[in-house]
Length: 104
Image (cartoon, rainbow, N blue to C red; front, side, top):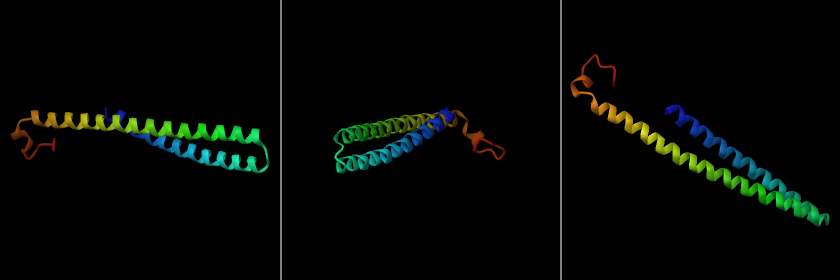
């Protein structure tokens, strides 16, 4: 379960990085729109604008997915900790405080 938790955290970070990349591409497309408008290329500006909108939407989708992965990761982490605590609560107290105990 702990391996899955690590994988979820890594996936979440990858989604955030992909979102930042989409934001860069969005800004690049907006600059291309401005350039096309200045040159009088209305059709090209429209295509660049559509690309910019798509990049912005894709970036937001990546952030949404990252947030969901973080939420699942938090739930999984809580489950792992609860499992550890319940395991320790089942062990007799005398064993926990013994000098040769390797549990704690």
